[in-house]
Image 1: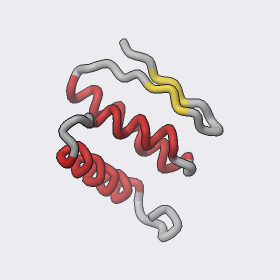
Image 2: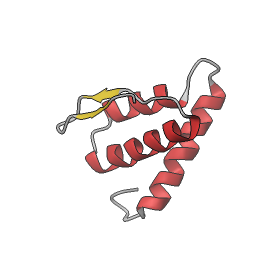
Image 3: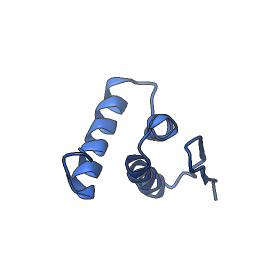
Image 4: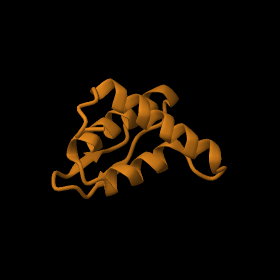
Length: 81
């Protein structure tokens, strides 16, 4: 999607749909778990940034604190409130 020039909004919608599908498919997985793993293993900083914003949005909606340490070239750390 990045190579084809899709907008950030379209990438975010796609990522959210992908996330929702995985959370519904597996009874044991939660938004934070799936997104944290995605961000940790994502090779594209741009996509990882969009996923990080989605993670923070989901955490704000649910009211639960976010805690993530992602091992990207650029270390991203978000700690709970």
